[in-house]
Length: 322
Image 1 (cartoon, one colour):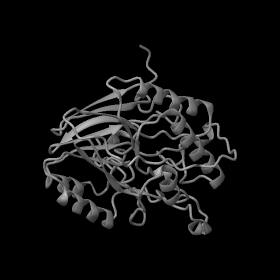
Image 2: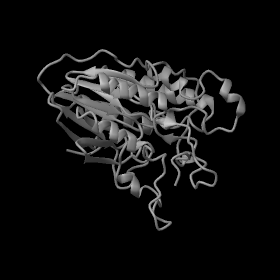
Image 3: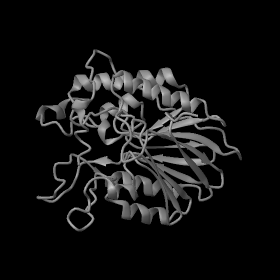
């Protein structure tokens, strides 16, 4: 199984001449208070300029705006566009333009985004000259999403958030069965040290949420592909954070870390481990705009985050009737 190819020939792809405008990530916080935060988590939009995808995203945004209590902000867990890893520049221009225009027209809510693996341009293209292009790698996604950097901190109400960059070059041994993957799920050492410092300086009474694209922990990813075919579980580091052990240990040292939110798997799950709740948010696109993925329909997640660090999550099928 490969998340890289995505059956891309099955999609209606439009090249066009759209220009991808940057979407400003709202870095202003919401007011402090005793009421819960009401947020929407979207992930894996995989938008392309086709009618089905554009109308699907608009339908999801309309559904979010109809919720009561009203949603106060949107968390975007990445893979905003169909694919940049292996896609020519002209097509990526059209994808980012479609995403930004739909989001800007469809909502005025603050949006906090992270970079998904399919938002990284060119890592899967065998063109040596691309490395000199200023859009190469994550630079394009940072600009298109209006991010302050590949990772950053922000506050909403009583909660402190850390938005992480979980897509990095792999460090695989020769002959590894997943050696063709151009990325793996992890933090580089610089980012990990930044997160350690941030948590050490954080108010221990203020609950912390982590937002990443690739899950730090996931049970569902065991079943995504033939990971048991060898007679042993072999789950790729591109599916789940390969550095999960050191992150779990870090979180255990800081009991105010209460929630980890992610996307990537196109599955929705909620699991509890050592006092931390891990929520995988499914996918707005489901199976890349072709129905359900592994029995999971296209969804977003409604989050209620209380000032005491407790949280509730509800997966919402925005196509369901009634």
